[in-house]
Amino acid sequence: MGLIVQKFGGTSVGSIDRILNVAECVKEEIERGNQVVVVVSAMGKTTDQLVNMAKELSTQPNKREMDMLLTTGEQVTISLLSIALNEKGLEAVSYTGWQAGIVTEPIHGNARIAKINTEAIKEQLQLGKIVVVAGFQGVTDTGEITTLGRGGSDTTAVALAAALKADKCDIYTDVTGVFTTDPRYVKTARKLLSVSYDEMLELANLGAGVLHPRAVEFAKNYHVRLEVRSSMEKISGTVIEEEATMEQNLVVRGIAFENEITKVTVLGLTNSLTSLSTIFTTLAQNHINVDIIIQNTTESGTANLSFSIQTDDWIETLNVLELNKGELGYEQLDAENKLAKVSIVGSGMISNPGVAAKMFAVLAENNIQVKMVSTSEIKVSAVVEEKNMHKAVEVLHEAFELSKVTN
Ligand code: ADP
Ligand code: ASP
Ligand code: MG
Image (cartoon, rainbow, N blue to C red; front, side):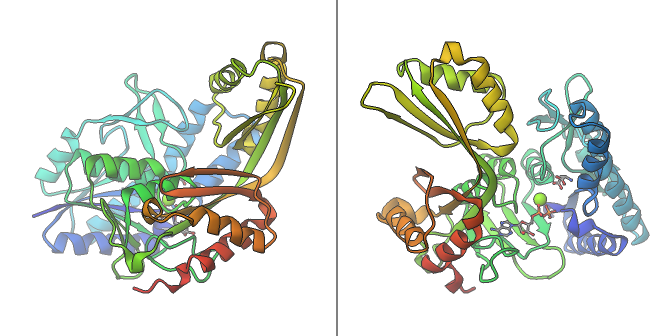
């Protein structure tokens, strides 16, 4: 007998009919002789609706109260699914994150899981029950309710699979697997049979919303066998594993993209020796995440610095820099909004030079200006104007022959 963790996302539990479908899916796993822990998200767009209600009351709602509010979404689904399972003659028990022993660091809105006390779940499994756990939520050492960040139910599932040493973690969603790029935007996107942990981690961090980045981190660190698959179609999905099979020797395996990026430029930094550390320490103290950084020295000996941030943070960033102008010592500040980041990802890049060159050539041929660049061993990211984002993804998808993937 094996232990399987199944996770069902918002669309997959979006109505009573869908919950019945999920119950059937769980039943099939039980009939295969396995023990099952199920992790579920809030129904459909519930989390968005709860966020919007709070925003009607306040532009900056208290983060503790937001966690209290958002965790109610998942609580509805765990009870409904348990009731549906009971009706099918299966014994199921629903657990909130805190009942399931999911302990997080004391941060509201985006907490990391610190440890999982698995005794309660194990006890229920021993009794032959299916345990249905609310995704996306946990509790601090002092009993405060927290959430794991949007999309965090994936992380609940993979972390539970790691802690329980499950044989497999299946992420059931509204697509049939991980595609070469988001199939909602690119019609020629193709499903991949497998992706390596490292490639998936890059794709998730660079905007491919199909998996929460921390879920991939857990899977990689604890060697969890992970599969992304459809909750509606009974076909195999995409396996995320150590070494993905090289499908048709693809150098680039996927393209991720995200918008709402802002480029901030600080001109005329007078003390180039210390100003970099002062600027980024000041931003970090204000919890502003900086992504790509470019610095160059001018002939007069001053330095110009550009960096990218999420557009959500741009007003705060400029305020922080202006407040500290005296200490930082610069001449002028500039910000460019409405930018996007398009990234190509693939382990094959390590041994294939010229991938970045090809990317820039393709973008140039299509009159898409590149504003910033960043690379790692297995990815190249280009910041472009938001209006060019989908075009850039499409032409790169064609150029790297991703629409030709067959499986
Ligand atoms: P769930 O509610 O099941 O967690 P999500 O909406 O979080 O579902 O994730 C699934 C969505 O991820 C898909 O509908 C798709 O639009 C998007 N997505 C983005 N990039 C990819 C990709 N490379 N492959 C598959 N889906 C992707
Ligand atoms: N319900 C949460 C969200 O919409 C968590 C999740 O679905 O993973 O972000
Ligand atoms: Mg999700």
